[in-house]
Image (cartoon, rainbow, N blue to C red):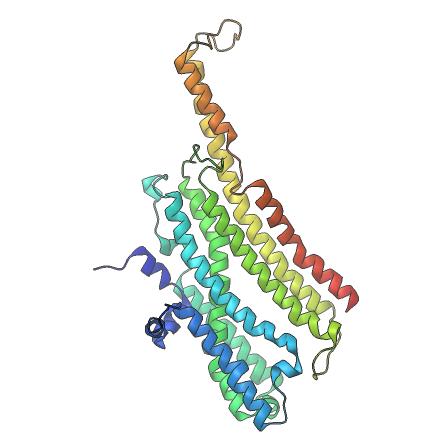
Length: 361
């Protein structure tokens, strides 16, 4: 029996490969309540880092536990777990949204696609993973120097961080989250635009049946925003509060600038996805209105003379007019007005907070 679209789509994930190779997929079914394997996988590396290795620091070396040195370092495990949740949310809910909207059934059969085509390939993920890992090792061995790194963290911790925690845990999770975010905000809208699905004009929300897609785009960006807020905590927490025993330096323009780059990327991403779906809805709405207008002209003897047109007691005219009203009522964005306001607030908030914290740090 061949693999389903869902299984093929999951196998595009870099973390799927790691989870399967290390047996976490089988482990997740041994609990009374099934826990997603990716959650167990990410939690294992977080516990290894902030539990085992940092406990080793605190007991057997002169270094304090990372939380004691900097309480805001907890933003790191929080970000790892958030990324794992985000990967699963984007993977599962993308498929669910497409099924709920029957999107491909409303599209031209010639452009029908499958789930695997809505995400970036495993080969690309692997290439990015190798590049990020290579940059990490260049940083350790070329910039810091392995002797300095060992002197600071010790042999055991160096092996744990450089050989296990980052290459097998944190880096693949981060890469998969980034790729899934790009897939949702760039690849998915482009594929939907190419397939040109007919809007569901009878949608009671007046969103053309695109509400589930809009929810995925919106909530995916919310997860990205939560990651940005964790980054703000990690960057600005120590200098503003002075908590922890580690030396706290003032946050400067490079840190604020790097955060702005991350924020701008998210802005471009969500702007791209919403604009593509908006453009599709506008084009389809205009196209259907033009068709109905032509139908109305065809059933009226002189459509340009309103005084002589028989509009009442004409069932065909009334039917077309009702259809025009229904099509005209469809909004041109896949979100409600309140949701659009919430999304705009979530877009602006991280950078505003960044600028405010930069001014007082």
